[in-house]
Length: 317
Image 1 (tube, helix red, strand yellow):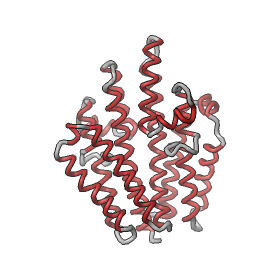
Image 2 (tube, helix red, strand yellow):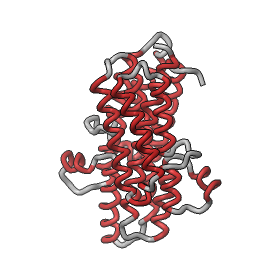
Image 3 (cartoon, one colour):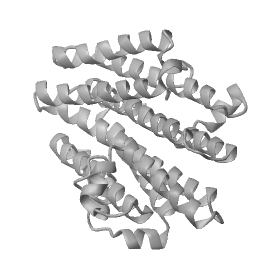
Image 4 (tube, one colour):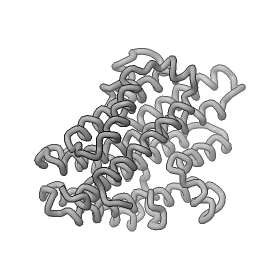
């Protein structure tokens, strides 16, 4: 496969996944913002949204103080923000258009229709009327895109690069979400009354789980009260949890092996080591050495892996 074609397919998948992840993140923060909390905690929640995407500096330069409605507009429909849902869906559509002949008709039409419909919704005030409904729509369209891809495309190199892009992006986002949310819990409510802290813990971690479609999964797996340690274990080490770091790396390695070439041995080796660390890791060891340190290192390794994939298979930057 031509490296330029592989590049478009890889980034088509990453941008579609990023749009969904942004919608999930905004949805959970919008829902938790409706709960009783101080103005400081609410502002820290919206600051966390920007922090997950490393957009705090850019937002501050353009808009100054953090204001919920402004943050949502910035993350949903601001064309100048390359990580906004609008920008991601436009980039996904442009990458799909560039390799139209490689995709099935269903995949192209799904991607194109998602972009056209979202631009209409962004213009007619859907975000202001019902933010939650808009976020659910974005998630549904991403689900539809993945389903159409898996259901209609030949499972050749094109399919493998799409899957690599999807799961590499998902691993990155899950790690960022965990890192920011654990920091928020530690900083917000130290010294709070036990009852209030317990209530906050439940709603906080319920929201985190719902942001990755993991609330029902947690109940089924652990059948117990929600605790930070179990949330971390579910989202890091459980290979049967679709959005966990372990599940994502399993998929990345599987599809990397299927497109391996003579120059990708080192990239595959590093991906395999990261997969093995998650497969044989234990949550008590991760927490003992520091969750933030673990997630920071994971993000660095995922970033290096993305660079390796670009170097080995895709168009040179």
